[in-house]
Image (cartoon, rainbow, N blue to C red; front, side, top):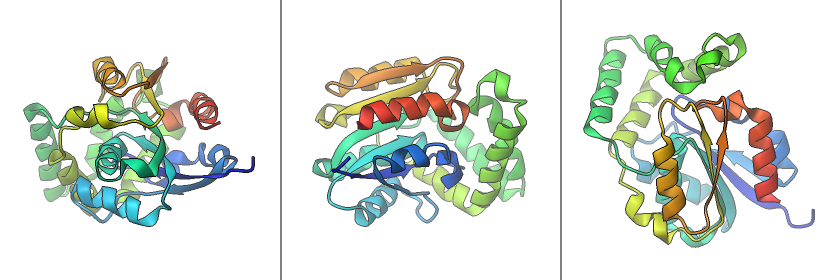
Length: 232
């Protein structure tokens, strides 16, 4: 391949570079992938600008979970710079009141010194029910949460809680877009996917069966095949 692309990967909350471990070798065959774990900022705007400031003028963008909120903001700020877009386990609306209440509860748990219990509560929402007892996957989730730590998690939660509703800006996205959804996702829904697919001109939706929210580690082979076909 003569034209190698730059690729920015933005993971979700409580995730580190480890979430992309199975994707990086494949992506490296297409270009230069860089992972942007969001540790330092407590607004989606600051997260988005940090990625834009670090990347070359044009690049492909792969985002997962919270990373999609960052991706939407990047597209509002510099749409001409993003050549291709992949949104995994994503949704476009702002938090509902119920979601905000849950996040405020997580912040209180952190303040009470109960951060370790947060990932245990979230595991059933993050993976397919059959994988809640998968030792390798749950160990990875716990390791990433530990490496994230309570202070970074609090910043990520505050950013998510204050994010903009991205639905009004979906129609402005003009780059080729791939949406990937795990059928048993406990955080996003199929309606969220249809909303983005219908709002982004030409967007393609791929559904992974027997998969939850954490598709990069639950279904790495399927994710790699989709990324390879899309980036090629």
